[in-house]
Length: 240
Image (cartoon, rainbow, N blue to C red; front, side, top):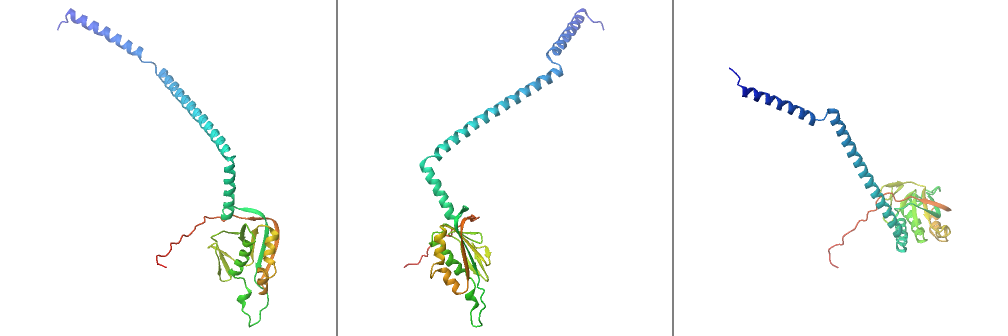
């Protein structure tokens, strides 16, 4: 089949268009290494921008922290805050949640070492929970600000009960003699309250109980060490 002249012209024109399109595509597509370079540059610029943004946020937070510190300082120096802080310290001491130190006395209690006669009751010559309570109550009445027995802090909810030859303190601490009671307060007043004529010490000594005390310039009493729980009891519904 013969190819006519106009067919040759069409083929020639198509070839020229194809070459032009190939050259144009090659010109519009950058080399691979240039593409990677541009991508790395964009990533670097993005990371730099993120770092600068974080730095700005940190600087803003630091400014806020400094402002809050200034405000807290201004509040802390107000007369009302000072009184409140002192009240909180006092409440912590009374509640036993804060360890305390100061002058006071150390009292040591021991069972009697007397040789008993066959007709004597041995229970009268050993320490009981009520004997310990008498000493503690006397110290409280004399102004003791904090009390502990064998390093167990005593608070308003503390209990002391006899369990055989030992006593149970704060519901889970079993203590055996000798009992060492530490009390913070005016040493002279605390000592005299125990050993005054007809006082607690004299009555205990009558049964041979050994009681001694010494005034101490610096006593450390630990904190209670656990949460204080109050048991609220609902009143009965009966009349009268």
